[in-house]
Amino acid sequence: MDLNTQIKTDIETNRIMLYMKGTPDMPMCGFSNAVVQILNHYGVEYKAINVLENPEIRVKLSEQSGWPTIPQLFVKGELIGGSDIAMELHQKGELLDILDSSK
Image 1 (tube, rainbow, N blue to C red):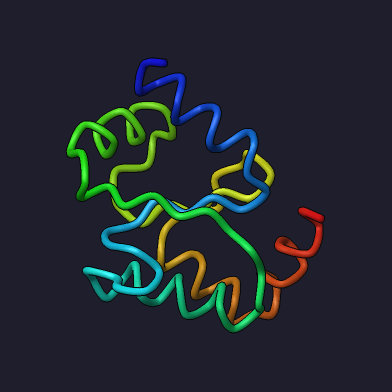
Image 2 (spheres, helix red, strand yellow):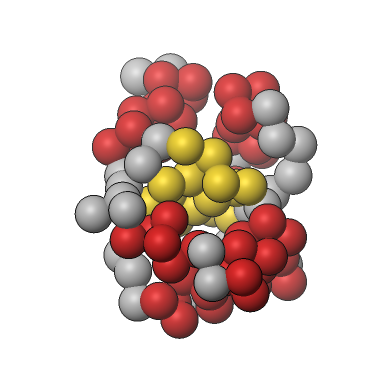
């Protein structure tokens, strides 16, 4: 399976998908850490992909999503956004509704 297909499959088959720098146990940037902390706060299950393991993931992901930065959070196949948007939705109390709607 080529990388574009793998990314599409991961986004479509995982209710909550996070592309990040590092892993949930060891985020490698503050922005990725912020999204991990928010998701952990809500206790939701999610799949995370470390874009640092393969630089091509970042390139192909950004081509597909139209979003240039990492992290990228997807819920039910839809791009929610990066750290700033996740934080804003969390602070407004809207992110939980988005995450809950993915069940």
